Length: 620
Image (tube, rainbow, N blue to C red; front, side, top):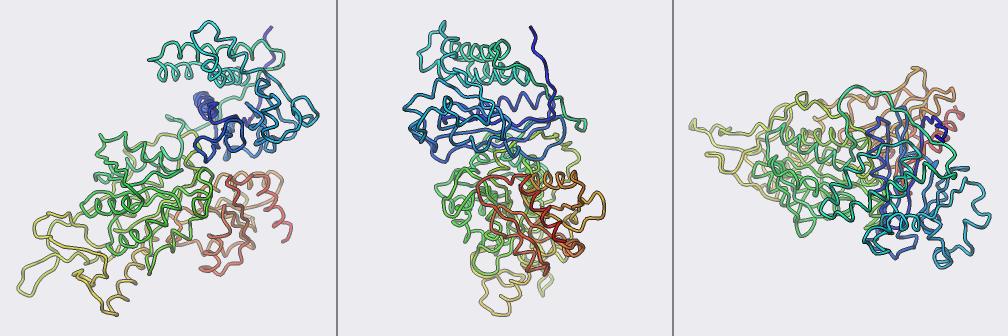
Protein backbone atom coordinates (compact mmCIF):
# COMPACT_ATOMS: atom_id res chain seq x y z
CA UNK A 1 0.00 0.00 0.00
CA UNK A 2 1.12 3.52 -0.77
CA UNK A 3 2.13 5.38 2.35
CA UNK A 4 0.58 8.64 3.44
CA UNK A 5 2.35 11.76 2.13
CA UNK A 6 2.75 14.54 4.71
CA UNK A 7 3.41 18.13 3.60
CA UNK A 8 6.23 19.98 5.38
CA UNK A 9 7.26 23.60 4.94
CA UNK A 10 10.93 23.03 5.85
CA UNK A 11 13.34 20.33 6.99
CA UNK A 12 16.88 20.33 8.41
CA UNK A 13 18.84 17.08 7.85
CA UNK A 14 22.34 16.31 9.12
CA UNK A 15 24.39 13.39 7.78
CA UNK A 16 27.29 12.34 10.03
CA UNK A 17 29.87 9.58 9.97
CA UNK A 18 33.57 8.81 9.58
CA UNK A 19 35.44 10.81 6.94
CA UNK A 20 35.58 7.61 4.90
CA UNK A 21 31.81 7.11 5.04
CA UNK A 22 31.14 9.63 2.26
CA UNK A 23 28.83 11.91 4.24
CA UNK A 24 29.88 15.04 2.34
CA UNK A 25 29.18 13.29 -0.96
CA UNK A 26 25.83 12.03 0.37
CA UNK A 27 24.86 15.52 1.51
CA UNK A 28 26.01 17.07 -1.74
CA UNK A 29 23.94 14.64 -3.81
CA UNK A 30 20.86 15.18 -1.65
CA UNK A 31 21.42 18.93 -2.05
CA UNK A 32 21.68 18.67 -5.83
CA UNK A 33 18.41 16.74 -6.06
CA UNK A 34 16.77 19.24 -3.72
CA UNK A 35 17.98 22.17 -5.77
CA UNK A 36 16.61 20.51 -8.90
CA UNK A 37 13.18 20.33 -7.29
CA UNK A 38 13.17 24.09 -6.74
CA UNK A 39 13.38 24.25 -2.94
CA UNK A 40 15.27 27.11 -1.36
CA UNK A 41 18.21 25.68 0.54
CA UNK A 42 21.29 26.45 2.60
CA UNK A 43 24.05 23.97 3.49
CA UNK A 44 26.76 23.66 6.13
CA UNK A 45 29.49 21.07 5.44
CA UNK A 46 31.38 20.26 8.65
CA UNK A 47 34.54 18.25 8.18
CA UNK A 48 37.50 17.53 10.46
CA UNK A 49 40.85 19.29 10.33
CA UNK A 50 42.76 16.00 10.46
CA UNK A 51 43.39 14.51 7.04
CA UNK A 52 43.07 10.93 8.28
CA UNK A 53 41.95 10.76 11.90
CA UNK A 54 41.59 7.25 13.39
CA UNK A 55 38.37 5.56 12.27
CA UNK A 56 35.58 5.59 14.79
CA UNK A 57 36.93 8.56 16.76
CA UNK A 58 35.25 11.90 17.35
CA UNK A 59 38.08 13.90 15.68
CA UNK A 60 37.42 11.88 12.52
CA UNK A 61 33.70 12.68 12.27
CA UNK A 62 32.53 14.44 9.11
CA UNK A 63 29.05 15.92 8.73
CA UNK A 64 26.84 17.73 6.23
CA UNK A 65 23.80 19.78 7.23
CA UNK A 66 21.10 20.85 4.79
CA UNK A 67 18.12 23.13 5.38
CA UNK A 68 15.52 23.14 2.58
CA UNK A 69 12.09 24.74 2.42
CA UNK A 70 9.11 25.79 0.34
CA UNK A 71 9.88 29.45 1.13
CA UNK A 72 12.90 31.74 1.33
CA UNK A 73 15.37 30.78 4.08
CA UNK A 74 18.59 32.41 5.22
CA UNK A 75 20.53 29.83 7.29
CA UNK A 76 21.46 26.12 7.28
CA UNK A 77 19.18 25.67 10.28
CA UNK A 78 19.66 26.02 14.02
CA UNK A 79 18.97 22.37 14.91
CA UNK A 80 18.51 19.32 12.66
CA UNK A 81 15.10 17.68 12.47
CA UNK A 82 16.82 14.49 11.31
CA UNK A 83 20.26 13.16 12.23
CA UNK A 84 21.72 10.21 10.32
CA UNK A 85 24.52 8.77 12.49
CA UNK A 86 26.66 6.14 10.82
CA UNK A 87 28.59 5.14 13.97
CA UNK A 88 28.88 5.91 17.71
CA UNK A 89 31.43 8.70 17.14
CA UNK A 90 29.03 10.48 14.78
CA UNK A 91 26.23 10.10 17.32
CA UNK A 92 28.35 11.40 20.20
CA UNK A 93 29.65 14.39 18.23
CA UNK A 94 26.29 15.47 16.80
CA UNK A 95 23.50 14.40 19.15
CA UNK A 96 23.65 17.69 21.07
CA UNK A 97 22.71 19.49 17.84
CA UNK A 98 19.53 17.47 17.19
CA UNK A 99 16.33 19.21 18.25
CA UNK A 100 14.32 17.70 21.09
CA UNK A 101 12.02 15.02 19.68
CA UNK A 102 13.92 14.92 16.40
CA UNK A 103 14.38 11.79 14.28
CA UNK A 104 17.57 9.86 14.83
CA UNK A 105 18.50 7.27 12.20
CA UNK A 106 21.39 5.10 13.43
CA UNK A 107 23.40 2.43 11.67
CA UNK A 108 23.12 -0.39 14.20
CA UNK A 109 25.81 -2.47 12.52
CA UNK A 110 28.52 -0.09 13.76
CA UNK A 111 27.42 -0.01 17.42
CA UNK A 112 29.52 -2.87 18.72
CA UNK A 113 30.95 -2.75 22.25
CA UNK A 114 34.43 -1.78 21.14
CA UNK A 115 33.09 0.98 18.88
CA UNK A 116 30.87 2.68 21.46
CA UNK A 117 33.42 2.36 24.27
CA UNK A 118 36.03 4.03 22.04
CA UNK A 119 34.06 7.29 22.22
CA UNK A 120 33.18 7.10 25.91
CA UNK A 121 29.85 5.29 26.04
CA UNK A 122 29.65 2.72 28.84
CA UNK A 123 26.69 0.95 27.21
CA UNK A 124 25.12 0.81 23.78
CA UNK A 125 23.17 4.10 23.57
CA UNK A 126 20.64 2.52 21.21
CA UNK A 127 19.70 -0.02 23.87
CA UNK A 128 19.71 2.03 27.08
CA UNK A 129 17.47 5.00 27.93
CA UNK A 130 19.84 7.79 26.85
CA UNK A 131 18.02 8.42 23.55
CA UNK A 132 14.45 8.31 24.82
CA UNK A 133 13.92 12.00 24.02
CA UNK A 134 14.24 11.30 20.28
CA UNK A 135 12.43 9.32 17.60
CA UNK A 136 15.07 6.61 17.17
CA UNK A 137 15.00 4.52 13.99
CA UNK A 138 17.65 1.76 14.18
CA UNK A 139 18.60 0.41 10.76
CA UNK A 140 21.29 -2.14 9.86
CA UNK A 141 22.65 -0.01 7.02
CA UNK A 142 25.96 -1.78 6.55
CA UNK A 143 24.69 -5.36 6.48
CA UNK A 144 21.70 -4.50 4.28
CA UNK A 145 24.07 -2.83 1.82
CA UNK A 146 26.32 -5.90 1.74
CA UNK A 147 23.29 -8.13 1.23
CA UNK A 148 22.01 -5.95 -1.60
CA UNK A 149 25.39 -6.21 -3.37
CA UNK A 150 26.09 -9.93 -2.87
CA UNK A 151 25.63 -10.66 -6.59
CA UNK A 152 28.51 -8.31 -7.50
CA UNK A 153 32.14 -9.32 -7.61
CA UNK A 154 33.11 -7.13 -4.66
CA UNK A 155 34.89 -7.78 -1.40
CA UNK A 156 32.95 -7.22 1.81
CA UNK A 157 34.94 -4.03 2.44
CA UNK A 158 34.19 -2.71 -1.06
CA UNK A 159 30.49 -3.46 -0.64
CA UNK A 160 30.41 -1.71 2.75
CA UNK A 161 31.71 1.49 1.14
CA UNK A 162 28.41 1.83 -0.71
CA UNK A 163 26.40 2.18 2.51
CA UNK A 164 26.26 5.96 2.00
CA UNK A 165 24.40 5.34 -1.27
CA UNK A 166 21.96 3.08 0.58
CA UNK A 167 21.40 5.87 3.12
CA UNK A 168 21.02 8.43 0.31
CA UNK A 169 18.43 6.32 -1.49
CA UNK A 170 16.50 5.81 1.74
CA UNK A 171 16.42 9.56 2.55
CA UNK A 172 15.59 10.46 -1.06
CA UNK A 173 12.53 8.21 -0.83
CA UNK A 174 11.58 9.60 2.58
CA UNK A 175 11.60 13.19 1.29
CA UNK A 176 10.49 12.44 -2.26
CA UNK A 177 13.72 13.49 -3.99
CA UNK A 178 14.30 12.37 -7.61
CA UNK A 179 16.92 9.77 -8.51
CA UNK A 180 18.03 10.49 -12.05
CA UNK A 181 20.53 13.19 -11.11
CA UNK A 182 22.29 10.84 -8.71
CA UNK A 183 22.37 8.02 -11.26
CA UNK A 184 23.83 10.42 -13.85
CA UNK A 185 26.43 11.54 -11.30
CA UNK A 186 27.43 7.96 -10.50
CA UNK A 187 27.64 7.15 -14.19
CA UNK A 188 29.99 10.09 -14.72
CA UNK A 189 32.10 9.23 -11.69
CA UNK A 190 32.37 5.45 -12.15
CA UNK A 191 31.71 5.07 -15.87
CA UNK A 192 35.11 3.45 -16.39
CA UNK A 193 34.49 0.97 -13.57
CA UNK A 194 31.24 -0.77 -14.58
CA UNK A 195 31.10 -3.13 -11.58
CA UNK A 196 31.54 -0.27 -9.08
CA UNK A 197 28.97 1.81 -10.98
CA UNK A 198 26.36 -0.96 -10.96
CA UNK A 199 27.01 -1.66 -7.27
CA UNK A 200 26.52 1.97 -6.23
CA UNK A 201 23.33 2.27 -8.25
CA UNK A 202 22.09 -1.00 -6.76
CA UNK A 203 22.87 0.25 -3.24
CA UNK A 204 21.00 3.49 -3.91
CA UNK A 205 17.97 1.63 -5.30
CA UNK A 206 18.04 -0.82 -2.37
CA UNK A 207 17.91 2.12 0.04
CA UNK A 208 15.01 3.63 -1.90
CA UNK A 209 13.13 0.32 -1.85
CA UNK A 210 13.78 -0.13 1.86
CA UNK A 211 12.29 3.29 2.59
CA UNK A 212 9.26 2.44 0.48
CA UNK A 213 8.59 -0.92 2.15
CA UNK A 214 9.83 -0.69 5.72
CA UNK A 215 7.46 -0.15 8.63
CA UNK A 216 10.12 2.07 10.23
CA UNK A 217 8.82 4.94 8.10
CA UNK A 218 5.08 5.28 8.45
CA UNK A 219 4.82 8.24 6.07
CA UNK A 220 6.63 9.94 3.23
CA UNK A 221 7.28 13.69 3.33
CA UNK A 222 6.99 16.34 0.65
CA UNK A 223 8.43 19.85 0.60
CA UNK A 224 7.07 21.83 -2.32
CA UNK A 225 9.23 24.19 -4.44
CA UNK A 226 9.82 27.70 -3.14
CA UNK A 227 8.54 30.65 -5.18
CA UNK A 228 11.54 32.32 -6.81
CA UNK A 229 12.08 34.92 -9.54
CA UNK A 230 12.08 33.41 -13.01
CA UNK A 231 15.44 32.56 -14.50
CA UNK A 232 18.15 29.91 -14.72
CA UNK A 233 19.40 28.63 -11.37
CA UNK A 234 22.24 26.46 -10.26
CA UNK A 235 23.38 25.30 -6.85
CA UNK A 236 26.66 26.99 -5.99
CA UNK A 237 29.08 27.18 -3.08
CA UNK A 238 30.96 30.32 -2.15
CA UNK A 239 34.46 29.42 -3.36
CA UNK A 240 33.15 28.51 -6.81
CA UNK A 241 31.02 31.66 -6.96
CA UNK A 242 34.07 33.72 -6.01
CA UNK A 243 36.15 31.99 -8.69
CA UNK A 244 33.51 32.67 -11.34
CA UNK A 245 33.36 36.29 -10.18
CA UNK A 246 37.10 36.66 -10.70
CA UNK A 247 36.78 35.09 -14.16
CA UNK A 248 33.92 37.48 -15.01
CA UNK A 249 35.97 40.44 -13.77
CA UNK A 250 38.81 39.40 -16.04
CA UNK A 251 36.44 39.38 -18.99
CA UNK A 252 34.84 42.70 -18.00
CA UNK A 253 38.25 44.36 -17.75
CA UNK A 254 39.75 42.44 -20.69
CA UNK A 255 42.76 41.64 -18.54
CA UNK A 256 44.59 38.34 -18.18
CA UNK A 257 44.24 36.90 -14.68
CA UNK A 258 47.23 35.65 -12.72
CA UNK A 259 46.63 33.76 -9.49
CA UNK A 260 49.77 33.43 -7.41
CA UNK A 261 49.00 31.46 -4.29
CA UNK A 262 49.82 28.74 -1.82
CA UNK A 263 47.23 26.12 -0.79
CA UNK A 264 45.53 26.72 2.55
CA UNK A 265 42.18 25.60 3.97
CA UNK A 266 39.52 26.84 3.33
CA UNK A 267 40.75 28.85 0.31
CA UNK A 268 42.38 26.07 -1.75
CA UNK A 269 39.27 25.36 -3.83
CA UNK A 270 39.69 28.73 -5.56
CA UNK A 271 43.05 27.60 -6.93
CA UNK A 272 41.52 24.28 -8.01
CA UNK A 273 38.57 26.00 -9.70
CA UNK A 274 40.53 28.71 -11.53
CA UNK A 275 43.05 26.18 -12.84
CA UNK A 276 40.24 24.68 -14.97
CA UNK A 277 39.64 27.90 -16.93
CA UNK A 278 42.83 28.52 -18.87
CA UNK A 279 40.67 29.26 -21.91
CA UNK A 280 39.69 32.54 -20.22
CA UNK A 281 43.33 33.72 -20.19
CA UNK A 282 43.88 32.59 -16.61
CA UNK A 283 47.25 31.52 -15.26
CA UNK A 284 47.44 29.74 -11.91
CA UNK A 285 50.72 29.41 -10.08
CA UNK A 286 51.08 27.28 -6.95
CA UNK A 287 54.07 28.90 -5.28
CA UNK A 288 56.42 27.37 -2.73
CA UNK A 289 55.04 29.53 0.08
CA UNK A 290 52.65 32.37 0.88
CA UNK A 291 55.22 35.11 0.32
CA UNK A 292 56.18 33.84 -3.11
CA UNK A 293 52.51 33.59 -4.03
CA UNK A 294 51.69 37.23 -3.30
CA UNK A 295 54.96 38.54 -4.73
CA UNK A 296 54.32 36.74 -8.02
CA UNK A 297 50.83 38.30 -8.13
CA UNK A 298 52.32 41.77 -7.57
CA UNK A 299 54.78 41.12 -10.38
CA UNK A 300 51.91 40.09 -12.65
CA UNK A 301 50.07 43.35 -11.88
CA UNK A 302 53.20 45.34 -12.65
CA UNK A 303 53.28 43.54 -15.99
CA UNK A 304 49.69 44.55 -16.85
CA UNK A 305 47.71 41.53 -15.63
CA UNK A 306 45.17 41.30 -12.84
CA UNK A 307 47.17 39.93 -9.90
CA UNK A 308 45.26 37.84 -7.36
CA UNK A 309 46.37 35.91 -4.30
CA UNK A 310 44.20 33.67 -2.10
CA UNK A 311 44.76 32.65 1.49
CA UNK A 312 43.37 32.50 5.02
CA UNK A 313 44.35 34.37 8.18
CA UNK A 314 47.71 32.65 8.79
CA UNK A 315 48.69 33.36 5.19
CA UNK A 316 47.71 37.01 5.48
CA UNK A 317 50.20 37.31 8.35
CA UNK A 318 52.95 36.01 6.06
CA UNK A 319 51.89 38.19 3.12
CA UNK A 320 51.63 41.41 5.15
CA UNK A 321 54.91 43.04 4.11
CA UNK A 322 54.24 42.28 0.45
CA UNK A 323 50.73 43.76 0.69
CA UNK A 324 52.34 46.88 2.18
CA UNK A 325 54.66 46.91 -0.84
CA UNK A 326 51.68 46.76 -3.20
CA UNK A 327 50.13 49.66 -1.28
CA UNK A 328 53.28 51.72 -1.82
CA UNK A 329 53.63 50.67 -5.46
CA UNK A 330 49.92 51.48 -5.94
CA UNK A 331 49.24 48.49 -8.16
CA UNK A 332 45.97 46.55 -8.53
CA UNK A 333 45.97 43.43 -6.37
CA UNK A 334 43.09 41.36 -4.96
CA UNK A 335 43.85 39.55 -1.70
CA UNK A 336 41.19 36.90 -1.01
CA UNK A 337 41.11 35.99 2.68
CA UNK A 338 38.79 33.03 3.36
CA UNK A 339 38.73 33.40 7.13
CA UNK A 340 38.96 30.48 9.53
CA UNK A 341 39.21 30.03 13.28
CA UNK A 342 42.42 31.31 14.86
CA UNK A 343 44.79 32.30 16.29
CA UNK A 344 47.74 30.78 14.44
CA UNK A 345 46.75 27.61 12.58
CA UNK A 346 43.71 27.43 14.85
CA UNK A 347 40.63 25.64 13.48
CA UNK A 348 41.44 25.06 9.80
CA UNK A 349 38.02 23.73 8.82
CA UNK A 350 35.82 25.98 10.98
CA UNK A 351 34.45 29.41 10.20
CA UNK A 352 35.18 32.75 11.84
CA UNK A 353 35.32 36.42 10.86
CA UNK A 354 38.18 37.57 13.06
CA UNK A 355 40.54 38.92 10.37
CA UNK A 356 38.82 42.30 9.94
CA UNK A 357 41.31 44.27 12.04
CA UNK A 358 44.17 42.31 10.47
CA UNK A 359 42.96 43.34 7.01
CA UNK A 360 42.44 46.92 8.15
CA UNK A 361 45.67 47.50 10.05
CA UNK A 362 47.89 44.42 9.74
CA UNK A 363 50.83 46.05 7.96
CA UNK A 364 53.66 48.29 9.09
CA UNK A 365 53.34 52.01 8.49
CA UNK A 366 50.21 53.67 7.17
CA UNK A 367 49.05 51.13 4.58
CA UNK A 368 45.33 51.66 3.95
CA UNK A 369 43.52 49.12 1.78
CA UNK A 370 39.86 48.85 0.74
CA UNK A 371 37.93 45.90 2.19
CA UNK A 372 34.91 44.18 0.61
CA UNK A 373 32.95 41.35 2.27
CA UNK A 374 30.32 39.10 0.60
CA UNK A 375 27.20 38.23 2.59
CA UNK A 376 26.23 34.83 1.14
CA UNK A 377 27.75 32.04 -0.96
CA UNK A 378 26.22 33.36 -4.20
CA UNK A 379 27.12 36.97 -3.32
CA UNK A 380 30.79 35.94 -3.47
CA UNK A 381 30.41 36.27 -7.27
CA UNK A 382 29.41 39.93 -7.16
CA UNK A 383 31.76 40.81 -4.31
CA UNK A 384 34.68 39.47 -6.36
CA UNK A 385 33.75 41.72 -9.30
CA UNK A 386 33.46 44.70 -6.95
CA UNK A 387 36.87 44.01 -5.41
CA UNK A 388 38.44 43.84 -8.86
CA UNK A 389 36.70 47.08 -9.93
CA UNK A 390 38.11 48.98 -6.97
CA UNK A 391 41.59 47.48 -7.38
CA UNK A 392 41.78 48.47 -11.05
CA UNK A 393 40.11 51.87 -10.91
CA UNK A 394 42.02 53.04 -7.82
CA UNK A 395 45.33 51.18 -8.36
CA UNK A 396 45.35 49.60 -4.92
CA UNK A 397 45.38 46.25 -3.17
CA UNK A 398 41.88 45.21 -2.08
CA UNK A 399 40.95 42.69 0.60
CA UNK A 400 38.05 40.37 -0.18
CA UNK A 401 36.97 38.89 3.17
CA UNK A 402 35.06 35.63 2.76
CA UNK A 403 34.96 32.92 5.45
CA UNK A 404 34.75 29.16 5.86
CA UNK A 405 30.94 29.08 6.05
CA UNK A 406 30.52 31.10 2.86
CA UNK A 407 33.28 29.17 1.09
CA UNK A 408 31.85 25.72 1.71
CA UNK A 409 28.15 26.50 2.10
CA UNK A 410 25.85 26.41 -0.91
CA UNK A 411 22.53 27.86 -2.06
CA UNK A 412 20.53 28.34 -5.28
CA UNK A 413 22.08 31.02 -7.48
CA UNK A 414 20.17 32.94 -10.11
CA UNK A 415 22.70 32.96 -12.95
CA UNK A 416 23.15 36.63 -13.88
CA UNK A 417 22.85 38.15 -17.33
CA UNK A 418 26.51 38.83 -17.99
CA UNK A 419 25.67 41.43 -20.63
CA UNK A 420 24.22 43.58 -17.85
CA UNK A 421 27.47 43.60 -15.85
CA UNK A 422 29.37 46.90 -16.05
CA UNK A 423 32.68 46.97 -17.88
CA UNK A 424 35.85 47.70 -15.91
CA UNK A 425 38.29 49.98 -17.71
CA UNK A 426 41.96 49.41 -16.82
CA UNK A 427 42.72 52.71 -18.60
CA UNK A 428 46.34 51.91 -19.33
CA UNK A 429 48.59 54.88 -19.94
CA UNK A 430 50.03 54.73 -23.46
CA UNK A 431 51.60 58.18 -23.89
CA UNK A 432 54.08 60.27 -21.87
CA UNK A 433 52.24 62.43 -19.36
CA UNK A 434 54.71 65.03 -18.03
CA UNK A 435 55.80 68.07 -20.01
CA UNK A 436 59.45 69.10 -19.80
CA UNK A 437 60.74 72.70 -20.04
CA UNK A 438 61.78 72.15 -23.65
CA UNK A 439 58.25 71.17 -24.64
CA UNK A 440 58.90 67.43 -24.88
CA UNK A 441 57.28 64.90 -22.58
CA UNK A 442 58.43 62.05 -20.41
CA UNK A 443 56.56 59.62 -18.15
CA UNK A 444 55.92 60.18 -14.46
CA UNK A 445 54.43 57.07 -12.80
CA UNK A 446 52.95 58.94 -9.82
CA UNK A 447 50.99 61.73 -11.50
CA UNK A 448 47.44 61.23 -10.25
CA UNK A 449 43.94 61.32 -11.63
CA UNK A 450 42.36 64.37 -9.95
CA UNK A 451 39.15 62.51 -9.06
CA UNK A 452 40.30 59.05 -8.01
CA UNK A 453 43.88 59.99 -7.05
CA UNK A 454 44.92 56.80 -8.86
CA UNK A 455 48.33 56.83 -10.49
CA UNK A 456 48.80 55.80 -14.14
CA UNK A 457 49.21 52.11 -14.96
CA UNK A 458 51.77 51.62 -17.71
CA UNK A 459 52.62 48.21 -19.11
CA UNK A 460 56.40 47.66 -19.12
CA UNK A 461 57.71 47.74 -22.66
CA UNK A 462 55.42 50.54 -23.81
CA UNK A 463 57.65 52.90 -25.79
CA UNK A 464 58.47 56.11 -23.97
CA UNK A 465 57.00 54.92 -20.66
CA UNK A 466 60.09 53.32 -19.17
CA UNK A 467 59.94 53.51 -15.39
CA UNK A 468 60.93 51.69 -12.25
CA UNK A 469 59.27 51.20 -8.90
CA UNK A 470 60.59 49.67 -5.69
CA UNK A 471 60.06 49.24 -2.00
CA UNK A 472 61.33 52.60 -0.78
CA UNK A 473 59.15 55.71 -0.51
CA UNK A 474 58.36 57.47 -3.79
CA UNK A 475 58.67 61.10 -4.62
CA UNK A 476 55.33 62.61 -5.53
CA UNK A 477 54.92 62.68 -9.30
CA UNK A 478 58.14 61.38 -10.79
CA UNK A 479 58.34 58.40 -8.40
CA UNK A 480 62.03 58.45 -7.66
CA UNK A 481 63.28 57.34 -4.27
CA UNK A 482 62.68 60.03 -1.66
CA UNK A 483 63.72 60.32 1.99
CA UNK A 484 62.26 63.82 2.32
CA UNK A 485 60.06 64.17 5.42
CA UNK A 486 57.50 66.47 3.82
CA UNK A 487 57.20 64.26 0.74
CA UNK A 488 56.66 61.17 2.90
CA UNK A 489 53.89 62.93 4.83
CA UNK A 490 52.29 63.97 1.54
CA UNK A 491 52.46 60.50 -0.01
CA UNK A 492 51.02 58.82 3.10
CA UNK A 493 48.11 61.26 3.09
CA UNK A 494 47.56 60.83 -0.65
CA UNK A 495 47.30 57.05 -0.34
CA UNK A 496 44.78 57.41 2.46
CA UNK A 497 42.79 60.03 0.53
CA UNK A 498 42.67 57.69 -2.46
CA UNK A 499 41.05 54.95 -0.36
CA UNK A 500 38.67 57.48 1.20
CA UNK A 501 37.64 58.62 -2.28
CA UNK A 502 36.26 55.16 -3.05
CA UNK A 503 33.24 56.01 -0.86
CA UNK A 504 31.94 58.20 -3.68
CA UNK A 505 31.50 55.16 -5.93
CA UNK A 506 29.90 52.67 -3.53
CA UNK A 507 26.20 52.36 -2.79
CA UNK A 508 24.82 53.90 0.40
CA UNK A 509 23.88 51.42 3.09
CA UNK A 510 20.24 50.29 2.88
CA UNK A 511 18.16 49.65 6.00
CA UNK A 512 15.48 46.95 6.10
CA UNK A 513 12.83 48.40 8.42
CA UNK A 514 9.40 47.16 7.23
CA UNK A 515 7.37 49.17 9.74
CA UNK A 516 9.51 52.29 9.67
CA UNK A 517 9.09 52.46 13.45
CA UNK A 518 12.06 50.44 14.71
CA UNK A 519 14.15 51.84 17.54
CA UNK A 520 16.73 49.05 17.38
CA UNK A 521 19.06 48.39 14.44
CA UNK A 522 20.96 45.12 14.00
CA UNK A 523 24.00 45.67 11.77
CA UNK A 524 26.57 43.14 10.61
CA UNK A 525 29.01 42.18 7.90
CA UNK A 526 29.96 39.06 5.98
CA UNK A 527 28.26 35.73 6.65
CA UNK A 528 26.24 36.98 9.62
CA UNK A 529 23.75 38.32 7.05
CA UNK A 530 21.65 35.14 7.01
CA UNK A 531 21.43 34.60 10.78
CA UNK A 532 20.70 38.29 11.38
CA UNK A 533 17.94 38.21 8.78
CA UNK A 534 16.47 35.03 10.26
CA UNK A 535 16.60 36.45 13.80
CA UNK A 536 14.98 39.73 12.76
CA UNK A 537 12.17 37.76 11.08
CA UNK A 538 11.55 35.81 14.29
CA UNK A 539 11.39 39.04 16.29
CA UNK A 540 9.04 40.68 13.78
CA UNK A 541 6.82 37.59 13.68
CA UNK A 542 6.53 37.94 17.45
CA UNK A 543 5.09 41.42 16.96
CA UNK A 544 8.15 43.62 17.53
CA UNK A 545 9.81 46.21 15.32
CA UNK A 546 13.49 45.82 14.48
CA UNK A 547 15.65 47.13 11.62
CA UNK A 548 18.49 45.35 9.84
CA UNK A 549 21.43 46.65 7.80
CA UNK A 550 24.51 44.95 6.40
CA UNK A 551 27.88 46.46 5.48
CA UNK A 552 29.59 45.21 2.33
CA UNK A 553 32.30 47.90 2.13
CA UNK A 554 34.26 47.91 5.40
CA UNK A 555 36.93 50.34 4.23
CA UNK A 556 35.88 52.92 3.40
CA UNK A 557 32.48 52.70 5.06
CA UNK A 558 29.44 53.83 3.03
CA UNK A 559 29.10 57.61 3.18
CA UNK A 560 25.70 57.51 4.91
CA UNK A 561 26.62 54.98 7.62
CA UNK A 562 27.04 57.55 10.40
CA UNK A 563 23.66 59.08 9.61
CA UNK A 564 21.98 55.66 9.69
CA UNK A 565 23.52 54.68 13.04
CA UNK A 566 22.44 57.94 14.65
CA UNK A 567 18.74 57.28 13.89
CA UNK A 568 18.38 54.37 16.33
CA UNK A 569 18.23 54.17 20.11
CA UNK A 570 20.22 50.96 20.15
CA UNK A 571 22.57 49.40 17.58
CA UNK A 572 23.39 45.68 17.97
CA UNK A 573 26.52 44.36 16.23
CA UNK A 574 26.66 40.51 16.08
CA UNK A 575 30.05 39.14 14.97
CA UNK A 576 31.95 35.85 14.93
CA UNK A 577 34.84 37.54 16.73
CA UNK A 578 35.22 39.52 19.95
CA UNK A 579 33.88 42.79 18.54
CA UNK A 580 36.06 44.04 15.70
CA UNK A 581 33.46 45.88 13.61
CA UNK A 582 31.93 47.06 16.88
CA UNK A 583 35.27 48.66 17.80
CA UNK A 584 35.53 50.41 14.44
CA UNK A 585 31.98 51.77 14.58
CA UNK A 586 32.38 53.07 18.12
CA UNK A 587 35.69 54.72 17.28
CA UNK A 588 34.58 56.37 14.04
CA UNK A 589 30.99 57.34 14.82
CA UNK A 590 31.02 57.60 18.65
CA UNK A 591 27.87 55.46 18.84
CA UNK A 592 27.16 53.34 21.93
CA UNK A 593 26.76 49.98 20.20
CA UNK A 594 25.77 46.68 21.80
CA UNK A 595 28.07 43.88 20.70
CA UNK A 596 27.11 40.20 20.62
CA UNK A 597 29.98 37.86 19.90
CA UNK A 598 30.59 34.14 19.43
CA UNK A 599 33.71 32.32 18.26
CA UNK A 600 32.55 28.71 18.20
CA UNK A 601 33.61 27.93 14.64
CA UNK A 602 29.94 27.81 13.63
CA UNK A 603 27.41 30.33 12.25
CA UNK A 604 25.09 32.09 14.69
CA UNK A 605 21.85 30.35 15.67
CA UNK A 606 18.87 32.52 14.79
CA UNK A 607 16.90 31.74 17.94
CA UNK A 608 19.80 32.76 20.19
CA UNK A 609 20.29 35.98 18.27
CA UNK A 610 16.55 36.67 18.34
CA UNK A 611 16.71 36.34 22.12
CA UNK A 612 19.47 38.96 22.27
CA UNK A 613 17.39 41.36 20.14
CA UNK A 614 14.30 40.76 22.30
CA UNK A 615 16.29 41.49 25.47
CA UNK A 616 17.57 44.78 24.02
CA UNK A 617 14.04 45.76 22.97
CA UNK A 618 12.80 45.02 26.50
CA UNK A 619 15.46 47.32 27.96
CA UNK A 620 14.21 50.40 26.09
